[in-house]
Image (cartoon, rainbow, N blue to C red; front, side):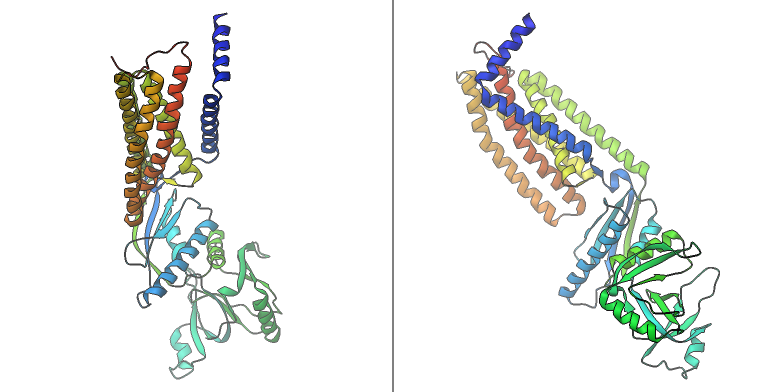
Length: 457
């Protein structure tokens, strides 16, 4: 019977205080939505927590004007991003690096094969289809000998791709390309009649018309398919070729896939060098994650214990606000597609300190009002009202500092600043709104006015 009486009392209280009920429902719905978002979109771990490969690439633009360097760097970044996306590495990041204006930082969390990564990134992917004038030759000297050691201006010399079991051959080609990489609309891996992997391609309408006309008039002639100045194959034209074709070679499925990705993503406007390479093992990343989580849990436990001992019931409100602050912070990072790194964890831990500082400021304001003889309800309203302006000032100044860190700092500092800013924004909501609702519920549950449980003697 006592249980039903208490329940009936709570229902009556809710009916007389709709605003408090609506605020509570808002908090519950928001929390439930955040938990669902975290489950559906879990946080991505960065290189230092998951392990992987980090590369600093230098784009060769030294001979260009500053404006051209910026354009080439942007094009290179876009092409590398397309290549990465084609491999399904959505967690990888590509961003400008350093102050030279021609460097890119590329990070691949979870990738353990740096050699493959280097091959994919450094391949320029320049496709050209030339008509063969003569060849093959065993070496370049034999080709030059036909012209007395001087190559005609309308011809160029190219060799076949180096193979372990076959010597390279040389061909004299017409210097004017019939088809270029920009003429391709698509490229993907397929299989020929012998079940060997090939790269099937599709040409744009204009290129297909031009290429069909050429192949129709040159049936029986040999042509050469080059990628990055190396001949992959030199087939004989057997008939008119329209908008589709195949590139064959002595390669595995993975090699054919890499070539298709390079052709589909576009050719790099300039060659790139790898300035620095760092490989983080998965075990080292897991160890960093474990220590980071341990530090966070220990910090939260110590803070909650201190708040409960010093502020008693109000400390429980602060613990609730702190918990929800963590949930909202993780949700924001997950929804924005942020990658959690060790500096990010440091920013989250610092957010705990900022959140505690906010609650302490509010609680001390309420204590001052209670000492002045105000009722619990009046002290609560005055305490939150007076503390809010101070909280807003401290949070805004910290956010401004974080903006400068993000604009001029390294990627590690940018991750720290981003996490801290999001944590400060969620902290304003939890420390002011959630904590106030918790206090209001404490007062509404009492049948007569009583002192707040805020640790005062």
